[in-house]
Image 1 (cartoon, one colour):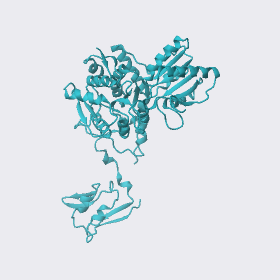
Image 2: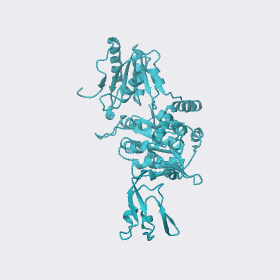
Image 3: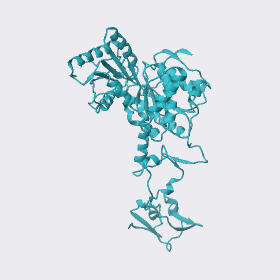
Image 4: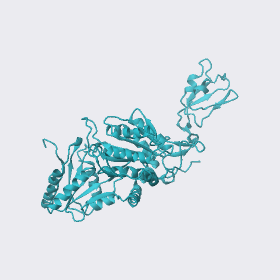
Length: 390
Length: 96
């Protein structure tokens, strides 16, 4: 069915079709509409979900952990400060290997207070052991929400599907929704090896784990992250074979003959694709690498993409506040260290607090990358693109 | 005999254990002071049994039998709570 939906509406629709056993949520400012829309579905009896309206996002994530440990299929939604408030519990979910899925809207973290798009919220939780997939448009947000439930349950790891605030969350687009019956069929029942509610086979979960065993349990969690990419590939392929929409781990756009390229995440990928088209009309061979799966970081696929060009512009909608630039830039530099081919790289921090990035601006970045290619050197590695007073 | 500890590949996923594993966690080796119970002085008022946070005062038919040193952490609450006129429990330095 082809409909017009915002990112929030599409993710709420996906949740309705997934029909999770439990959703626990709290609408902290800046809240996102997903839970509000979903609670209407609950009220209208369209889902069988146990909806738990808790008193904070910290509690929301905690309730999700309990429900997931009981064997339930569990989802929630949050943004910005809400995710920050969940931070402590994020590690508990991943450590206990509970496949919770968060529909997330990327908004800046305070301070200053802002409700618009940048990736500082999810990237601040980068090391919490959650899968992170960043989407480019409403269709991808909808499709990825469904995929991620299956991926998370197979990997026994929690995951976040990310959408850019307002650009995707409130932008209305053409979306192809799946048939209501197809989604549960695609996902199947959640299979569990144990349940907190199984009184005949009692278990201990989340117990004290000191010097003797903590390290071993952590090592096993790290191993799970090491093995999740094939699961993502398998589920993406299964989804594509069934519904006709295929997604890559790393989205390469016109990279095969590209001389310079930009790497970006989220909706900027879509904007940059138009910039690529315009540049190519002018005869300039440019490409785009869109990082879709960010955690785990797809080292092999990313290295293959990055080394196709001589000059790379890495666009980060966040800063690590460490003097080392943005997150993607640091990941790219890290995987290139042992590579025999190393492109020249420049880091463009941009769009913080929802500042727009236009097609024309991306074209100027491509022009600058060509200048770098010509001169063979990067004068300044990290620049703050689009900020006044620079 | 020391038990062989498991490597990470042999552990159940997600820190899930069978129920009641506390019994394998012998907290008695945390002790730096040890309670000594004097059966001659004891009036079996059971105050120590009520207060012991680790259920280490063993009781049979309403009479105290002794202290379970396998789990007693040596916190000294029993000695503190034993009525001053009785003083049936005293703390001594743990020698191992």
